[in-house]
Image (cartoon, rainbow, N blue to C red; front, side, top):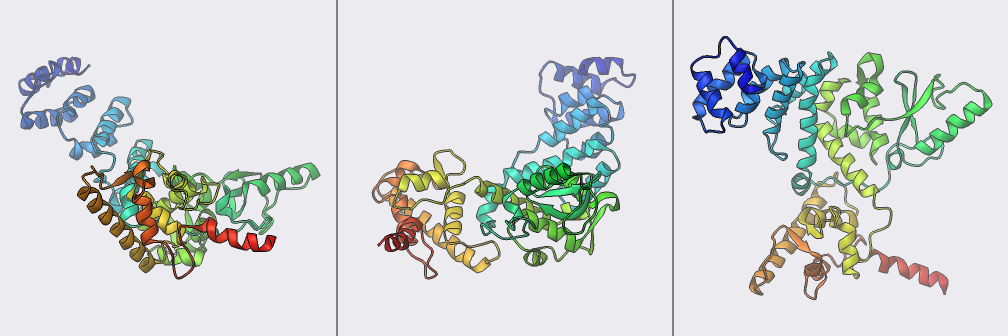
Length: 408
C-alpha cells in the first residue's frame, strides 16, 4: 500500500521515491531524509507511506495534522501510531490544560478522533499510578461521603444510581440496591417514578457512568443540556463517589469556576486527584476482609500484595502502613512522617541484605524474604510495632482482648 501510494502520486519523484523505495525494502535511510519524507506524506495525502516512515521517525509535530484528517480510517491509524510512540508511563506532550481542553471541545463538536488524546491521558494516569503513589499517596477513610437517603449507607461503597429522563434529572443518588427496590416498588404500585428528595419526575434509574473510564460521558450525563455543573453540585457528586464530604473536597477544588464545564474539570488538577483516589478506593473495596495480623507474615504479605506478583513493592508497603494507621491524603504531615519511616525500613533492609551477601531488589521484596527470620516483616514490626494513637500492624490481637473479656 505504501509503495502503491507513491507510484500513484504525481508528486512522487526524486527524494520521496528514493526514500520510499529504501523503506519498502527494510533499508535504513538518513534521519533528515525520513523527516522530509514524512512531511511529503502529509502534503501528498499518503497515509500508508506515513505509517512506514513513522517506524523510523518521531511523529510528534505531525499529531495535530494527523488528527485533522483522522475522519478517514487510514489517517486515524497514523494518529494512533504517533500517539503509540510514547511509552506507557511517559507523560503525553499534549497533557497540558490548553491541549486537553481543545481535545475535549473537539470531541463535543462531534470529532470523535480526538478521543484518542483523552484516552491516552487516562492511560498515562493508570501507567504512572505506582510511581505517583510513592510521591503523593492517595488514601482515604473506609467510610464517609454522601449517603443513600434510604439506607443511609455511604454511596461510595456501592454504585451511585441516578434518576434519569434522557440524562440525570437531578444530582440525588441512591445506592444500587435501594435503587432497584425503589424502582420495583414504584412500578408495582403504578406510581410515577420520582426522586425522593426533590420529587422531580423520572423515566428510569441508571448507574452513574464511570468517572475513571469515561469522564466526559459521566460529566455530560450529569450536566444535561446545560453543559456545565455548578461547583457545589459537582463536589456533591464527587462526595457520592469518594468517602469524603463536599467540604473536604472544596479545599481540593478551590481553583474551579462557579460554573464548571467538562473541559475545565478534566484539565484541572482536581480531576487527576479524584481519578487517582477513585482508583485507589475501588482497589481497596475489592478487599472484603479486614487486614490480617502481621504475626502471620505470609497472610499479611498476600493481603497487601495488590498486584498479585509475589513481590511486595515500595508502594504496596507504604499503602499497607498508611491504611493500617488510618491516615488519609488530607493529613500531609502524618503521611510524610510515615513515609520517612517506611523509607528507613527499606534502607536498613538493603544494607543488611548487602552485608549478608544476599542479592537484593531495592524496590520490592519476595514473600520468602518477608517471612523469614530477621526478614523484611521483622523490620516492619520493629519500626511500626505501636502507635501513640492506638494503631499498629496487629489489629487482630488488639481486637481479640475485648471479645475474650466479654466471654468471661
